Length: 633
View 1: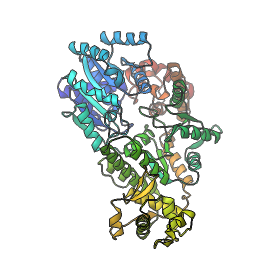
View 2: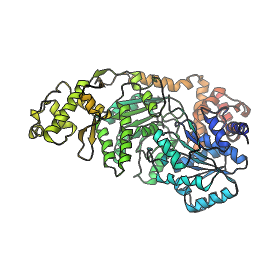
View 3: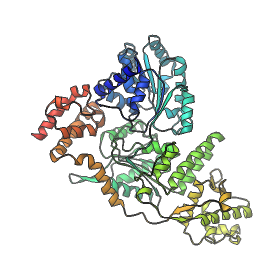
View 4: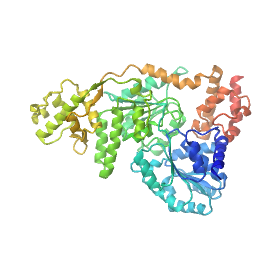
């Protein structure tokens, strides 16, 4: 087919199978290019519709007699839900992974060789086995390999935030199956990772499709850790993500990320004790328990999942209203990927991070103590520095976040710094005092010390350690009594973010002067810090604004329509339980709202509602009309 024919065929599939009238953003260009046999590298934010970018051309190519599309996917849960969604839409799909019995695997393989599948999902470690490669070669010889789709493609890069060695074997696809188009997709990759993806997957001839990284519905907030970060989190959830339903207090669905397994379990227990429906998730839990917790998160309302980064990739739950971090992520890509799991439905959501000096120290130590090469450590330090700069910023968070990915943006008006511009003060002289004190200490003792000792000297505290080393005789002793210890620690975070100071994790987290220290000591450059103050009493206002924005799409519905929407959601929940699928796989909230607004009296009147393809109309149309009729009668 020529390009125009492919374009029309893709549009027909979108309308008939998925129930949408038009493509979003660059989807039209991508599906046309891939459907016509071109290779592609697609960078599209979470919730931007990446799956359609390979599912639509897969269906088009299968209908043209070009065979099956093989989708490389790293997670069992993701395969299950995506295959379930395709089956609901009437598309022949299956997966091969470790959750299947031998008989089930054989049944899928028989369907594959009979040409009965449009899409087959497989994990990278299965796809690269000699047995599976031989099966693919047999299909290739018959002209029945239509497309390879490599999801979460950043996993192939050592510079990415979720490197998986099994992805490296996917380079063989280009060598073993020439002429079969490939599409690699990811939501997160900076320039270095992008280049590595191209090299590792042999995608030098691929066309690049880079969508905006902006998620305007997400509000970014980065808070300084106080005495009890957990209580800060509880207040955040209660003040901004709780509501009353039928006289009962309920909370939004959210994800809380912690660095260690022990902390995950501790935080989950304390959130549960505080009245939140919180569950732990990490790789050390029993596999069956982990699966139960994940299923509950996907299928129930108001679950707060407390997890390590083992949880999240491929989680398609659209109504996650917040993602919180109680520990600093490793880099901006990880932060962006994790926060991107909020608000996939386009409704208002929040990304909340609490961090302090110890987070910086811990991340530096993990890099320094790793067995990686010096080159790798250098790159990882640079990525961490970029995240620290974002955390310490007093200007628009979104501008800085997007700039990291090479995208320009005006101030967003929807981050903490835009909504509540922080007061700042000129901390340049204080920074020089700190750096001078470090220099004098190292000159006098020939060794480095940690942050606490430097602060004691600056504040003129005659501790045993200060007296032991004679540091009370230094010219910098007592020159910093005008600042509290918390302010000095806040300044140190800024100096670390600017590479004027670095933490030596291999020597008890002692401090060393960095490359940027000399210019500051010579009077070049300026350091500005936000004024230390209690958090602004704006939570109630923010909560009201968020609830108004969240309810905006439903506020236009009249009373009867709102009652119909509630009934439709109840019906959908029953169908989802029966099919063992999350409710959003049956119908998204937006589709139910459109139905409630239209109040259809017949199946014919459902035509044209977004998200209602032919198969779903046939399977559920009569039931939907019956639910509506019961409410409007």
